[in-house]
Image 1 (spheres, rainbow, N blue to C red):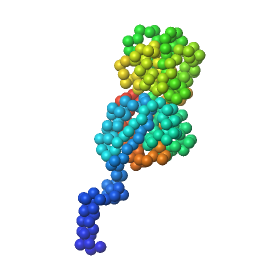
Image 2 (cartoon, rainbow, N blue to C red; image 1 turned 135 degrees about the vertical axis):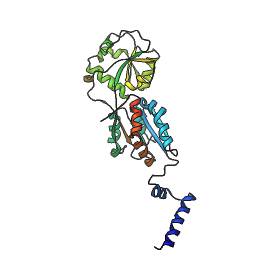
Image 3 (spheres, rainbow, N blue to C red; image 1 turned 45 degrees about the vertical axis):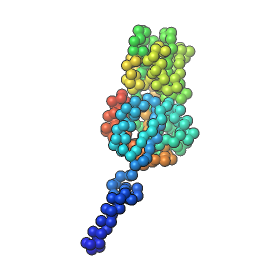
Image 4 (tube, rainbow, N blue to C red; image 1 turned 120 degrees about the vertical axis):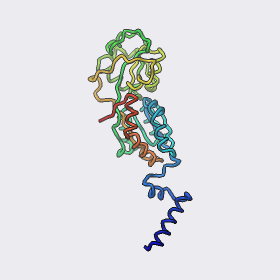
Length: 269
């Protein structure tokens, strides 16, 4: 190609770009980045992640990618699993336990190539901030006269961990009649914070999010067979797969990881 023809080709390409008539494919070719303008990421995330996402991570991502909107749905991981199975339009799922993620993977509903063991949390025993109750350890729960709040073990991972710990500590039979089962970990936190429960079992990150409760102690390490893992994955038939992929990459960036740590999570190695 001679010089004149090359100049004409370059000018033609510039003209196409300047009038905004290039397709998403041209945008990808020119910039090396997908055209995400107007896309939405539907995030289904465990209730214990709400503060970190709403207060910091979603605003950071939307500022970095102004053409993309992140729409979150928060609930217990079990409820989210059921919603996704029933057609919830989710693009990314972040669970508070492997049980729910594994169930969706077995049903072919998540992209296993993106399934990542991402964060860890701790399970703690809490009481109201102004409590004068003589509760200093899990063993004291057998002597509690009032309500003990935990998540519903049937659908709430925090409740499943609480039940496992209480069983392994030999306390389940002694406390079962005192239990109030919350629909998610936030409900348990609110019960204790408002004083309607004498104590409760939640994640360390939830206890850190409010001044209405104080931590008595962590669950003893030998009381849980597995660590509290938060996996994350893209939904297999996501309608916004490019934006979801970019969102997943953002969450694994150092700036996002620092936010998770700020909110009390640890990174799974």
